[in-house]
Image 1 (cartoon, one colour):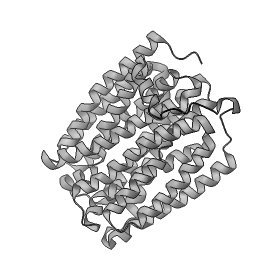
Image 2: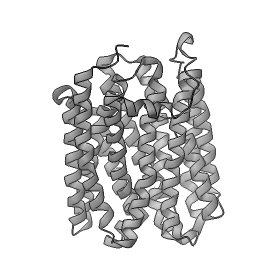
Image 3: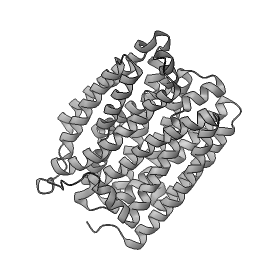
Image 4: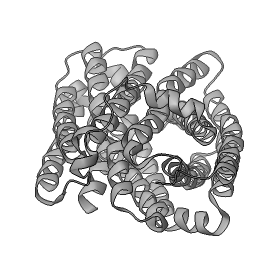
Length: 392
């Protein structure tokens, strides 16, 4: 478990390390704002394909070899980004790095393989907690170690450190992680990797759960993709302030998912936890948009992240309980791909609203899109109660 959680942290370091640097990539590479937000979007586009491919591959050949492939490739991706000479090379590198970072479904599949049903929400909460620790470390590395005054070379130190952490994770997987798939079940289906998406669309629980994942992450990514631009325009913040605030939100999210999310699922049920978390996040996001000073915006953002963190393990639990044991990697991969797809289109919307309507627009839109996600999450839990989970 510790090594798997470290792998989750590394995945989010790659996602978060660039966020506080986005406004300054524009200056260093003489890039347009839409090119900068494209750095954010193509990473998630790569993740979409990676989650579909690697989750299914891990059902067939095992979780451990897939983890090793993705971690090594992610480390190479950090180094390639550190030495990218132009914005277009950086965009291409981020797309490839996103593909090989699409291993969340492999890790979730491993947790499902080795966990009794009663322990699953808590352990998935730990995965979510590690997810948010990465969201602390990534922006902190990017914001505190970068030196924008040096141009593109000023972004190399945090990326080189991230690559070194991948080396440590590779050693950890080799030394400590045993294969969780039994030989008789490791063959898995070989069909179209999009098959799990079609399976989810036909399933009464998975259809609603995947829609919840898509809308929830669509809302949040449209805000996160312009956070550096928004805080610079609204409060005059630089990468250090953005990195520190994001580190604080990551700590809050990690504690929430490690301690609170599993407890709320046991006490309230998955549906109420999903709906309550997203509704609370929506209110806080609207408060953030209206905040007159930076510290108030930071508090509202942190509170919204707490609400956003509560619903994710509960939704993953619904997906797992609705899926055959031999299909966990493929279906969890399709669920993660839904979130990755939303992080492709969310930043596009955020960048367009920021440029065309105003800096406030992507933050308000994020709060509003969380409300239909809350309703769909409630409906997914109700459908699971009516139809029951998979008997396996």
